[in-house]
Every structure is written in C-alpha cells, then in structure tokens.
Length: 490
Image 1: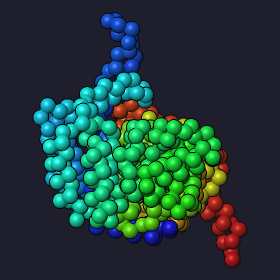
Image 2: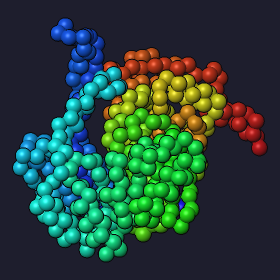
Image 3: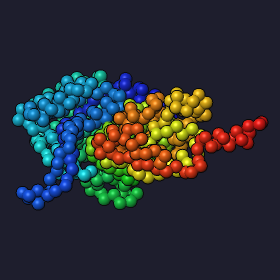
Image 4: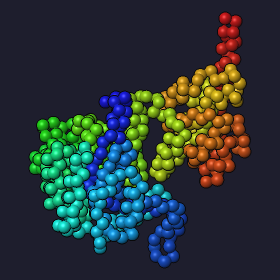
C-alpha cells in the first residue's frame, strides 16, 4: 500500500454503502472545572463550561463510516422518549438511510452522560433499557434489514448488549448475509460469542477474547490458543484481536497469524476505538480490499482515534497524513487554515497546550532552529504560521524571499520540533491566529509585548504571550551580506 493507492481507496469509499446494525447510544459530555468542595456533602463541585452531545454505540460506527466518506444505512431500535428524539435528531442531520430504525413504546433509549473536569472524567450517569426486543419486533427488524441487503457491500454488527441484537435475530441476519455473500464484521460483547457464529470476522479486544474463551492471554501461546479457539468454534473466516499497546493480531482460517504493532503515539482515551476499527475494516472490505490490507488500514485509524478524548472519528486526511509521516514525507505537516482549525479543535479537547509562532524563515539557520525548539518546549505541540512569498515581498522588498514558500515549508517540516505548518498570505498572522486559538503565542525577543500582533486576541480567552531571545548575530540578512562579501566580485 502506498500513498497514491491509499488515496484511491478513500476516493472509492464514496461509491460503497455499508449497513450498520446495532445498539444506538446517546453520549452526552459536560465539561467544567473544579475549584471547591460542596458544603452539602464531601464531593467536588463542577462548574459547567460547555456541553456536547455525540452519537455513541452503533451511532459512533456510523459516524466513523461517514467520516471515511461511505454511504451508510442504519438498523436499530430506540425508545419513544426524549433521548430517542434527540438521538434521531442527531442522525437526521447526517446523510444516511434511517429506514430500518424502529421506535418502540416504553423503551428507554440508551444515554450515557459523562462529567469531566480538569481534563479527567469525574462521573458517568447511565439511563437505558436492556431487555430483549420481542419476537414481533425481531421480525419487523429482520424484514427491514433484508430489504436493504441488495443495496449494500458490507454489514457491520455493533453489539453493546442492550437487548436489540438477540441471538436468534443475529443468526437470521448472518445467514441472510451469507446467502448474498456479504462480509459481516462484528464488534462483539459479553461472554457468549456463539451468537456470532458464521460471521466473516470478529474484532474483540484482549479482555473480551479472554472472557469469551476462558483463556488468560499472557504470552504468545495463550494468544494463539484464544484466536484459534474463536476461529474454530464460531466458524469464522478471521479474528482481528485488538491488544491495546501491543497492537493488533489477525487470525485467519487458513491457519496464518499476523501481528501489527500499535500506531498510537499517545493514548488519551480508548473509548470508541473498537467502533473505529470495525468501521474502517468494513469500509475497506466494501471497497474491495483484502482482509489483511483492511486490518492495516484500521490499525492506522485506531492509532489516531485513541489520541482523542471521548468517542471520536478519523478522516481520510488524518490517516493519509499519518501514513506520510511514517514514511518520512514532510508534506504531512503542511495544512491550510481550515484544515488546521478542524485538527486543533480535536487536539484542544484532549487538553494539549497549543503553541503558535510565525515568521518568514528564509534561509533556515541555527538561530531559527534554536528559537523553534524553545517555542516547542513551552507546550505540547507547535503550529508555525509561515509567511507566503507574496507577503514577504510586501514586507521585505522585491528581492525576498530567497527560497519560495513550498521549499521553505518542506525544510521546516523536517524539524521534529514543528508539528504543523500553515502558509498565510496576509501581512500579519491575526486571521490565522483566530483559526489556531493557541494557548501560547510566541515571538522573538526583539518585540515588546504590546507590539505582538494578536496579543489582545490570545489573552481575551486566557492565552498568553511569550518572548524568546534570538541567537545574537544569526540572521538571513547576515548570511546574505557574508555571501556578497565573499562572492560579490565573482
């Protein structure tokens, strides 16, 4: 797999349709801060700053598929209650087929409310029904599902044991998919995996595999035994076992086992990572990839999503950029202002400190490098705003820059201390700052704080300005003068 073929795969995903069957969950997040203990009881008081509602459970699988560019149909059961209405309202904002969703009276729609403060989860409150749906409701759901099968290229089962996917219904669905030669990928739960017998592949994590097989996975032998037991007992084509920091293992029915090391650089939250894995594998298989290539792709996606807070998704751009970084391509750090705003909105939710600086960086020298390294040490990641050729010409005259903007960006991207680069065309970075919203704005020590463009904006939301001294005698102008002195006569 190379960058070009990967791009073609993602382009092809727009032409495929995937059916997701499973439990829908409404995920609510309340973010705030804690600075005192309640006088009413020995508990912390969370002062709410913002709230958000997301699609969870099978809804997060749907969200992942949509982020990858797929067309999606969804089959599930929700209650006729306020949470059900809110969930359907969220789904209604997406471009997907909801014809196989049933509303059931007196059923509590699954809702999980998480309260987070100071970058950690304080409490979770659950409201839900878990009783099995009735035989009549099963028949209705199966009828709606079979009506959709001729129009899809893969079926994903997202089971959260909330009573929708009862064993009898699962077996009817899997048999119908086998008849139409559709791949069925299951994200399983519980201790009885026989309910998934005959599926194409299962994607359990290590703990789920241990519970289902009664095996404690402590070494390669126990891992192999668990994978082989699942394959043989459930008559599967494959088992994709996710192993947290150890990566993923693919067990195939031909007896082969392949291991894929973890792609995650940092882990903030593994919730929803299984949804990303099953969605990526399903989208890849629907697009015509072989299972091993699909697993490689899902491993990349999982490495990205666990670095985000809460149930999240990944985009083709994020996967392509990670692929480029792994293969040493400097272009993976260069983004537009719109792209960086989207990326940083996710980063900001993980609690990382964002540092921003800007400049021309024409003829990169040791002074530049030391300045950028010091800026990066102030936070968790560094965004560099790079003046375009046109803006440099306006600021420094028509003899500058010496190196054009693409070349300057590629040279800078080779520095480990820089995480993202955005080329801006304006004379000042104020417009770009409004997209980045950094925690720390850095400028050279030749500025006074009140002279720093964007100071008031950054400080308006609690950010700060830092000044870093340049290395004395190191500048592009000095380099140009030295070249003229030494080679001018020639």
